[in-house]
Image (tube, rainbow, N blue to C red):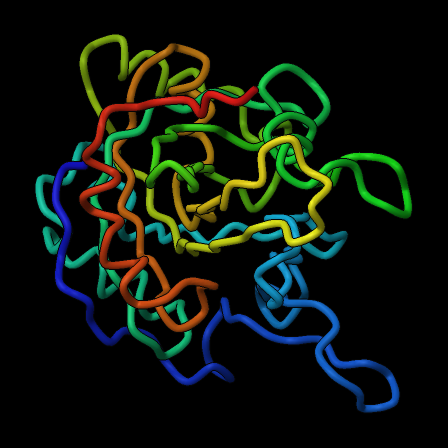
Length: 275
C-alpha cells in the first residue's frame, strides 16, 4: 500500500460510460442470471454471483476485445504516481466509469502471470480447497483468460484476501515491442503506473463439502491502462504501481469490509495454511 484516498463520487450516467456493471435477466423476465462487467455495451466478464456463497469468479467472455487506455495519460503514467490525486488521473479515467462511489487505492504490485490450470492457478488450487469441484462439470471454474496474481494475506482465522489483476485482453494480444520497451525502462529503475477499476467480492461456501470453508475476499483489478506494463513487470520480476478505483456500490462486500482494505493491504504477504 502506498496511499489511499477518501471515497468519492466519480463517473458519468451508465448509458454514457464506456464501462458499467449489469445484470442479465432470464428470458421470460425472471430473476437475475449473470452479473456482468460491460465494455462499450458488450458483456466483457462474468463476475461472482450475487448469492455470496457461490465461488469467486471473473470469466472473460467472447465479446471482451477492447482496452480502455487514454492516450493523453500515457506520458504521465510512464512513471510512478506518488499520490492517487496526482495529475488528474482519477478524473480522466473516472469519465469512463458509471456514476458511483469509488475508493482510490495506490498500490505497488509484483505481478506473476498465471495460466488457468497451470501452477499457481487460484481456480484449480485454493478455490477447489474451499468449494470443491463444480458439482455439474466435475471440474474447477475456468476464467478463460490468463491473469496476474499479486498479493494475499489473512483477514482473520476464517477469511483470506486474494488479489488479482485481470487484463481486458490476453497478454498474447500485446505488442512485443512495447513490452520490451517497458522491460528496458524497469531495468533502469523506472516504476510505471497502471490503472484499474476494482471489485471486492466476499464469498464463502455453504455446501459443507470443502476441505477449508474459509471466506475468500477477492480483490480483483480489471485493467483500464497498463496491459504492456503488467506483462513487462511479470517478465522482468519488477514492481509496477497500480491506481485502483474500487467500486463500492458494485462490489459484493459490506461497507465495513471495504473500509478494512487499506489496513489489510498494508499487512505482510501471507499464504493460507490448510490441512
